[in-house]
Length: 345
Image 1 (tube, helix red, strand yellow):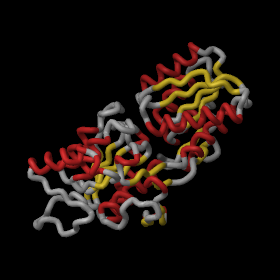
Image 2 (cartoon, helix red, strand yellow):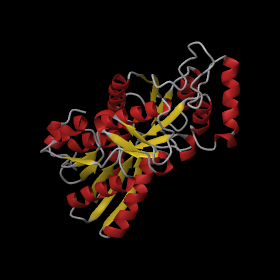
Image 3 (cartoon, one colour):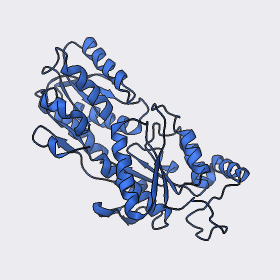
Image 4 (cartoon, helix red, strand yellow):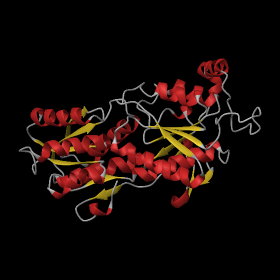
C-alpha cells in the first residue's frame, strides 16, 4: 500500500484495532507477537467482497478464488452488500480487518469511497487486492484487471459496429454510475466511436446499477426515448442479460442489436433465439482464481506489488505486476452461436 503514512485513516485504524485487542501482522514482520496471532498477513484467509451478492458474474469469480485457495492451501469467504452502492462495501472491509483476514479481494463500487476502510485494513497487516473494478491506486496493493481497458472498449465498439452496418444510433446501458471499470470503458468507447465510426451516434448512456429489474426498465426506456435506436452496448453481465430479456419479447427483437459483456450461461438462450448474435467477456472464474493467487503471494510475502514482481498463478502460469500495481488477466473473448455451448459459467 502506497503512502499510507500520509493518511490519518491508517492511524485511526491502528487505534481501533488496538482497542479491540486484535493482532495485526504485516508482511514485513513474520515473527508476530507469539501465540497463534490471528490470521492478519496469513494467506490462509482471504475475504472476497464483490460489488454485490447474488450476481452470477461474481458467483463465478468467487468459485475461481475458492479453487485457487484449495490449490495453495488457503480459504476464501465471500461477503458483500445486496446492492452495489458506493459505500456499501465499507462495513465488510472493516469486519475483515477486525477478524484478521490475510487479504481482502474487492471489486470496488466506487474508486474512492472505500479507500479509508482499505487503508485501515492495510495498517492492520491485511493485503488489499482489487479485481474487476479498481480503486484509486494508492488504496490497494494490486489490481487484477480482467483485460486491458482499451481492448475491452474497442471490442465492444467493433461488435456493435459490425451488427448495425457501422451507422445509426446506439446507446449504452451501464452498471453503477460510479463504477470505475464501466466509466473507463465508456470513455474509451466514446473516443473510439468519434474517431473511427463517424456514422454511429451515441445518443444516450443510462445506468441499471447492476440490478436486473432496473436494467430491464432502462432498456424499455431507451427504446421509448429513441425510436430510431439501432443498437445497445451493455458492458455489464446483469445489464446485457436484462436487456436481452426485454428485447426477446418486444417488437425490437431482430431490429435493435445488443452486445456487450455477458456470461455464456445467461446469454445462451438469447443467442439461440436470435435476440443476440455476439457478445464478449473473459472467464470470471479465471479472474477470481488469479486474484486469489495474487492475494496469496502478497500475504505470504512472496511479492510486494511492485512493478516487475512475478508470481505463479497455478494453471494460468506466471504473471508479472505492471505499472501502478496492475496485473492483466488477458484479452476479451467473443461468444456466438458456434462456441457458446463450450462454456458453462
